[in-house]
Every structure is written in C-alpha cells, then in structure tokens.
Length: 205
Image (cartoon, rainbow, N blue to C red; front, side, top):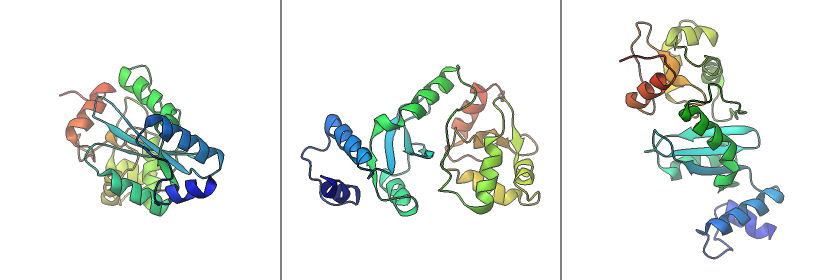
C-alpha cells in the first residue's frame, strides 16, 4: 500500500477507484498520514468572503487563498517549495476552519494557530512576522511595518511582501494602510479589506 500511496502523492495514477468519494479520500489521507507520506493537506472552506483554500502541514497553516487563484497553480507551488506529498484532506484543516468561523462570527479576536513560514523568505518573511503582531482592532502603515522588519526606508518592498502574503486573514496584512489612512492594496481586493477592517471595528466608511 505504501508504494501505491507514494505513486499517488507524487502525481502518479490512482490505485484507488472513484477517488472523488469523500470517504475514500479520507481513508487515503489517514493511511498516508499513518505511513508518514502526507506532508501537506488542503481543503476548501466557505466564508463570508467566498470559498477559501487552506493548506496545512504538521508545522501549521502554510497557505490561505481567496477565490480566483487556480488550485493547480497553488498545488504546484506547494509541491515545488515544500513537498510533493500533498493531498486533498479537508478534515486535517478543521482547526483552521473552526477558528476562521469564530473570527467571522465575532467570537475570536486572535488566531491561536501555528504558522508554517516556508513559502516566504528574507525581508518579506520579516515583514509578515511584524504584520502578524498587529493586534485586532488596530492598524499600522507600510512604513511602520518596514521599520519593524528592520528597514524603515523599504516601505515599497514591504508593500510588495504584503501583496504576496500567502496567509491573509491569519497574518493580517489587511491591517496595514497608507500613512495618510488610505487603504492601499490587498491581494483579495479592497472590498475584502474593507470588510475585514469593519469586522474588527477599525474602519469607518
């Protein structure tokens, strides 16, 4: 069975018929995990901002994406950077999904989730770590985040790092604004940025 799992997780033909069956997918994920062959699990989660795609590893949440980014491209990136041994296994994202529901429902202000930072490097990683420390209900600026990351003048590079944040919402890049109070940009679109800031009580139209 391990050879079959390895072939499937590396993109080979499936040894299991009707793999679209949720029950079969779950059994396969359990067997892969038990055999030490499942490094990344992913699944979709409905939210007020549309369906979110979640990727998790034993280290924590690796990626959260909004609708519009092709799943094939996301899987390819994760496979290339982290591990090709990944599988759709929504049940393994349950902890993330539960906390997202609590956040959108207004009962959670802080995510209690480990973060797997392997999709970010260098200065971008420092920017996102600084962004992760911005409290609920507060906002910062691109320049302030750049300073927190160790390069006060690199606010444009900080903006680029925030624009490529692989874990929005959990790593709250929506809390970073222009110095004059303008929204700036957001990978999920400005409507989603406004929604999140309004949800947290830090933005008024």
